Image (cartoon, rainbow, N blue to C red; front, side, top):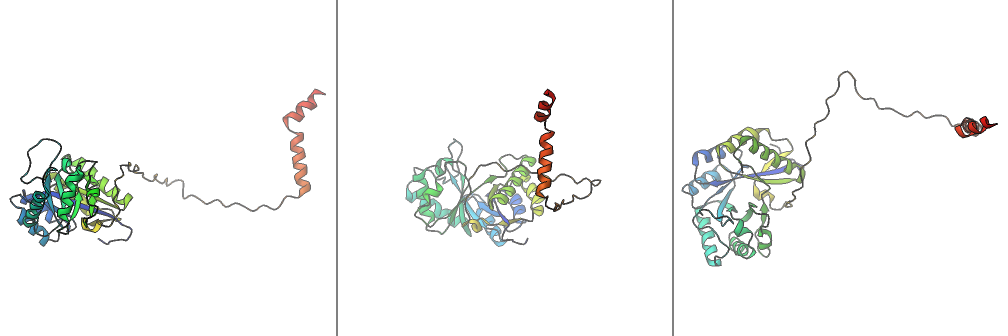
Length: 286
């Protein structure tokens, strides 16, 4: 695909790598601009990170962070009340478990990312590794951007989740939304998972991306403006079908008329007044 200076940039990241190699290998056969986020404690984490890198895909660490809801947590899930030393240890081990990673994004994490104090400890730890942070935006009140102030960590944000629902029609709809956001705003990041339905939709829709959309890696968006507007996208409009029986529209040109002599103009005005309703009414009274 030719990259145009005016093309909308779309980054797609597939989370939860490291548990399902058969489906993940299908992702790795897709265009190399598709990026993958690997869970550091997954049984196939190192293997899939290495294979992804060798196939030209950008690799991120998909680091578990504490959600607001109560549910089973992955080993070494980051919590706001953890000490800086504990957070540094977890991130250091994650970097070792996911080779070739250039960024990190959160797995779940609404309790962690909404904590400014907690995220400041995360950003200070990331600052040592030259990793960017892709905020999965699991909560609107994320503090990631504020927490990164004073560090070298660059923050980018997810705009669309492709597969909150695993209904194929809805995934297609979300993919189309991501494309339209990239067209409207210049760039967009979409996150999905290696579900069979998501894999199938990507296989179907990636080859027919609009010509004004370029697939990029998240790292290519680090210096792009970060949009967070929830303004609705304009409704798609289709041009009205052309009526073959009416022919092409003709441009009407105005003809230049010769100037009207002043005496003629006065005569026309006088006649108009004489024929007007008020004058005729007065005449009829006499």
